[in-house]
Image (cartoon, rainbow, N blue to C red):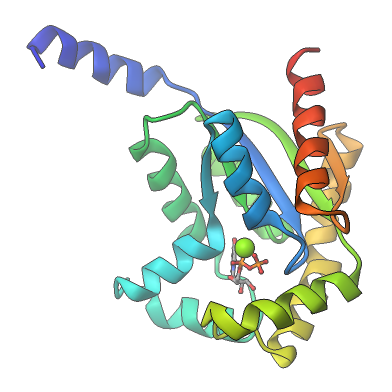
Length: 208
Ligand code: UDP
Ligand code: MG
């Protein structure tokens, strides 16, 4: 790369304002699965907040014990830790201009801090909420627990994660519903049907 190209790249990256979607839903609602498919179908980048936190534990981050405690108790990691990981992941990746953030924001504090720190750096598009019955979610997590190796895929932690979702995440969803920035999809259907419905909604939104 020559100096001129390098200059352009730097300019481009500081001017770049990536598009962002939040994908929300209870534990086992299919966020991860659907995001993987969307990233294949639309060339968007999938960022799982939970996965970034689990990686931070593996990499012995300075916040390792805080993160571990929150995850094992179905709690929510302090916003600045999660936002910092997301910020880095978004701005280190120039492979796409659109990012799917899966599993964040989880509570009002997450959302307010995100708005304060990130809103002017990105173009926010919409929340995609995968609405799923508790029976389906329990069935899927029970199945997943056989192979996931996740310390939080057990019935005790799952109960706490349901409570956090119902009490905290729901407020985020209502907030975006009132702003008309919510896409809601029935997550009890098959993977293919859910994917098709999300793709249709995104198509509508982006061709408005
Ligand atoms: N978590 C968090 N903040 C986030 C995302 C995840 O604190 O922004 C923690 C929280 O304890 C959650 C766990 O990580 O229960 C697992 O999150 P993940 O999204 O991987 O679980 P899923 O909902 O997909 O089953
Ligand atoms: Mg997930």
